[in-house]
Amino acid sequence: MTSMKFPTNFLWGAASAAYQIEGAWNEDGKGESIWDRFSHTPDHISDKTTGDVACDHYHRYPEDIAIMRKIGLKAYRFSVAWSRIQPTGRGPVNLPGLDYYDRLTDALLAANIEPFITLHHWDYPQALFDQGGWVNRDNLAYFADYSAIIVKRLGDRIRRWTTFNEPGVIAWNGYANAEHAPGERDEKKARQVIHNLMVAHGLAVQAIRGVDPGLEVGIVLSEWGADPASDDPADIAAANRFWNITETAFLHPLFTGHYHPEMIEAAGADLPEIKSGDMALISQKLDFVGINSYSRHVISATKGRLEKIPGSEYTEMGWEVCAPAFRRMLVKINRDYHLPPIYITENGSAFVDVVTPDGKIHDERRLDYLRQHFLQIRLAMQDGVDIRGYFVWSLTDNFEWAHGFTKRFGLVRVDYDTQQRTIKDSGEWYSSVIATNSVEE
Image (tube, rainbow, N blue to C red; front, side):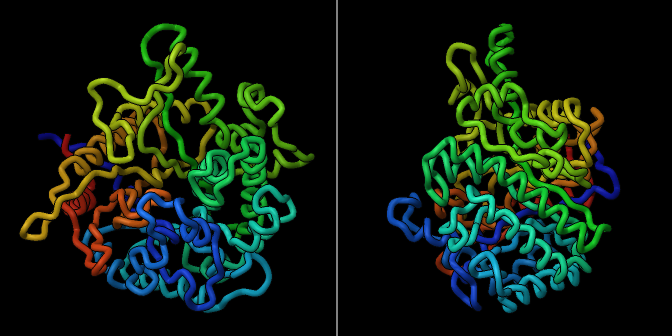
């Protein structure tokens, strides 16, 4: 076999999110988040679980960092629980919450692992939601205040900062289809949330740079390619329209200063209120952009988005495995926009894991998924896409939002009854990729 080498300074990492792993949901002064409320409400989580304990990372982070070091991670992407810092999302600071992230940051650095921080990964303070949430523009400045608090505490040690993780999921899954917290069904409201999140992002970018202009600031977007179902010109046109209406929602305002005309047309009467100065605030220069991607959309002019493609493999999430689409998407956004450097901030797969009698997890399908995608990333880099690093989703199995504990993405298995951690074959293989900085073709 031949190997594809990556650049010497390529940043290999793994990712997580606060609510999915931390637990300690009401300890040390932490306030309630919308995910605490949502998961505690009957019939919202498929297996009737909550993130109250999750992976107990709040107490077990030294063990998890030891595992990261064993795998050889160069970086670890984690998020901060806003309500752990400000229990009501505004006002007084909860110092024990700040102290926790201080300890986590120092422990990562002591292990020679770069902290790569996300300020908001969906766990919005419940008290702010009760005051109108992301729909209420008066609440947007609170995110900037919170961002400045974290940067002033950790900015001397953390270089790279992202404002939001997947704002589109916050808007559509939380406000349009009720799959996620806060569980609302109002498309017009969701479109206003999309815009308001971008304004909050702009305010936070200013706040971060106001504290330290030398820090690198970005945002993490979910982007799935839109492929036509065939070579028929009608399918190609339909796929392009689908992309312009859906996948440009954040790319376009961030990197062109306006929304895509086809997206505006599709919104119709649900177009959000846009105030003077909003677009300039949204489209400030970024130092990098994070891209999360797991699969693709396949679009037919007559049938719309196809749910199943004959002959394709699917993960436990029902997502098609199609690594070449990953490369096509990266090349497309690199061509369409003047982008800063890219980090792949999430990519991975959920499959059923079987623990063998000797305690091993031979997750060949996950390993192959990762290998295919690593190769396509390297090919995209050869196509001219400036990709600086990659973060597997996820380091450990965790609370997978509305799916509870039924979907496992981790390089490391977590036994939720005992909290025992076991590195899977995919984790061992990833360790060899990092050590050699290469992937076998």
